[in-house]
View 1 (cartoon, rainbow, N blue to C red):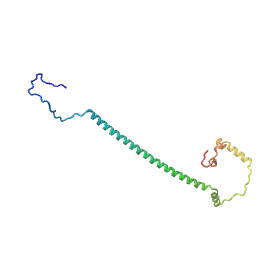
View 2 (tube, rainbow, N blue to C red):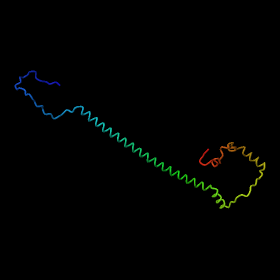
View 3 (cartoon, rainbow, N blue to C red):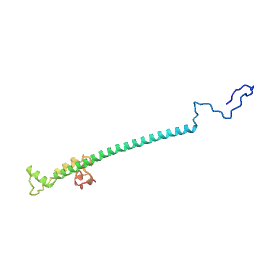
View 4 (tube, rainbow, N blue to C red):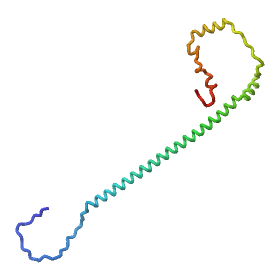
Length: 159
């Protein structure tokens, strides 16, 4: 900083005092280290706020997913219970004793014997002729594609 002063010097008339009082200042200079520490503190405070907000949001998301999982688990348990009840009802409906009772109520009786009837060759020939125009998949189904296969399979096992 340059200071402009007149080139002529006047002789000093008063002797200098040994101790001079500094001029009164109204402004103070803040060292740059204090500014840096204040900005570091503010950045740390904002960072902690963001971190805590993220943790709280993540915990809320986990709680929401847990509630959804509990709801689905409860529905699954109720569906399994209902399925078991339906299987029990089905087993009761196809039980031999129940079927015998229902047949007796309908007026059915047990057969006393079997009688075989001879099929004439003309009927066999007419059936063979009529099935000649059929789709081979329908006329000669494979043994694995039997419609009774699901009924003959053991319970709980599908082929």
